[in-house]
Image 1 (cartoon, rainbow, N blue to C red):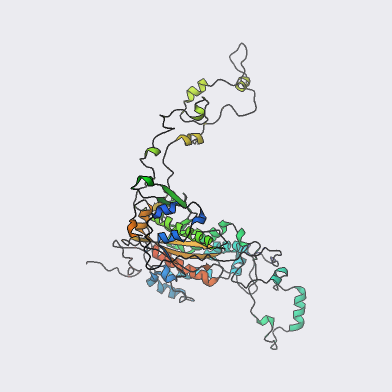
Image 2 (spheres, helix red, strand yellow):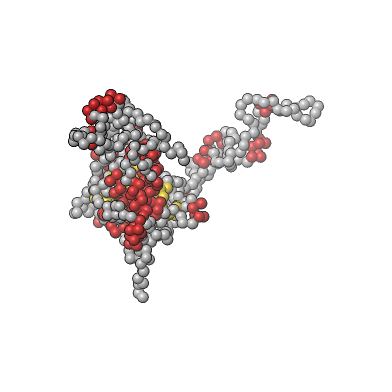
Length: 577
């Protein structure tokens, strides 16, 4: 309690011999489709994607075959399908508590999990906490007393976010402050002043600093910048990837937690499953299954009852969170690869959401190559070391009684347990070096036994996830999937409209190649890149994230109506009454 702030902790000058900063150059790859493009390439899109073996092989032809069309720098009203779920941008600044309660009647809406959306007061609290200047928040994180004449800020729910931002400030310059000149990095900062600077200042300003004769060029009349408590000591390319991931996760939780959601790491590797269509010709070969892995995590809905929460169940996913560690985009190829990672995360999320109400169908089920034993076409039998008669440690098929009876005692065993002549009682064994005679039985299967088993490929379904397409418009024929993308210290929100027909084609259904892309286009709305160091930009990012969560978690009627009139405190009109 009393150690909240460390009194009198000195603030050192900027470090010397700092490596040059990593330039922030965001990727600029936004494929566009002409209005007259039909995409009739005459080749299966799945087989085209399965020919990718290296990252540098990805080019614009693959996105054109998918029908990707990106809307760049889309405003928040375009990223969220229904702009009415977005809070006002700056109309609620300075609103008191009583007025905020009066706004709840038209702001709060019922959610799909049975709850009601958060109050206006919660939104204003998050906005006020994120408005704290970075250096003042970093002082609170480091437990340094505030500047003279200022009160310590209350970080509240944003403490974890500012804690991660303080770690990022060691690798990236705080863009909310003016950049440090090369001279200032070699000399101590002007605040606090050095002894020789303070004496010279007194000779200029005199002994009466409050005098009316102060000139307009007096340094004390100019508003001082906040004193720096963090300096960059390493280049941004050396920042660990988990710092960026933890920062984005903490920022998303500021909004998602109030809607009953959380960022959950996947228990199985996220994979974009691809299955080639059944071939009509024998020359093309059988169906081929492949996948593209991804390092994204998912934003899922938390359970509402205690039993499901203890079991670790989640529902969704609602969106994908993709924080990547790439810091250099010198050519178009690197930007293309980065956009491919974002698109793969969106398609994986769409595939997971499409699993609602569907049984798991693993590739190779009821196939002979996944159920029958075959060793060169023979009927089975001993292979490898089994032919020589050597006992396999941990072999589950071996008979323990026969192996013990057939195994002759070794020389070390005979020396370790000698018999007493003329008596039946043996002497205590003499300890010998080497591996002990008796070992504990293996609890898990050995590598050799696992190799011998013939079984299906590993499952890609998480047993603790109840796959649901939460927020999907019923009967629309597409699914709006959100991706929270992060690079450097920036955040971007993407909305990808994935047609259901495209998911069926990726799952192995044949395409109508003579008509081109029968699923149409794959539209992508990309917001601007929000710099989380800048207060205004992270406030707009939080507003966009709030509108996204309110729209995804909205309650829908059976006919797909969002029930916009069913707000808190209003009567729901009865249909066909």
